[in-house]
Length: 349
Image 1 (tube, rainbow, N blue to C red):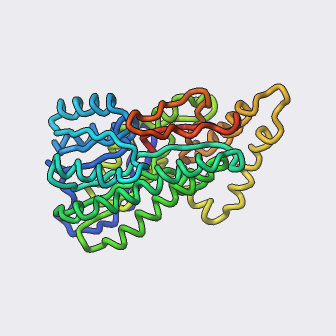
Image 2: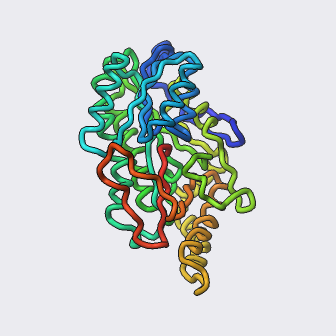
């Protein structure tokens, strides 16, 4: 077990090595494809990986932040290629992989980082909104990995990195679908790691804690509510350390996270009861309190306590504030069905 302490949060990694000594991934001049690279953890990881002068394929929905990031990567000595894509569209995984191969001759490392979140009561969320999370958080990385694997196998020592979430380890109320997708991508990675064991391709799963990303900007919960966000650079540093030593997983959050994982495994009903104590303010809002504010307070109360214990928590994003649909996509983003649920859209985790 390897412990790290960076940026105010500590984390641990399971350091069982799937390769023999000397056979770990060499990042120097490696071809690395990163999804959700335009902001947050994806951006931080791209900048951190630029130091060993790799060749980076930066994937996201928005051209401008990707171009700006590519310039910063080049300033650090790396090479960069920008690919704008909606990974949920049919054929997008194959197109992205083909672009990386055309630009850099192959793919040594694939980082599945893109994702979005929808918070709220399950029955208040439209079917299309449930499917949107499943499509980007789970189906897209599975299909992208499937498309990239022939190239990754060609590398001397290939690597697939899946960015999950603390909610993938311990599910939180109001995040039922998100929790399912993040647990799903974690188990996908574990199964694939065992499928590829001994064949020259390793799979690493990263479970970030509460992280300062654009997804979090609309959250009103701060230090007074118990939220202490970790900078994405700390997650990137821990991820690169895990790449270099062949770890199986990286879990941010330190001893509090480890304690909560153990409690959830050994006595899950105690976690249920603790969360139940924070639900009445959502169930019985004042007639003068908008449902959206009541939900925001309930989620903040529930999540603040768990961030103290090292759990990841995503914020709710005000329904009135939306990202425009990407110009290349003819399908607009789904709109909310009620004020009690909110999109939190991000290209991070």
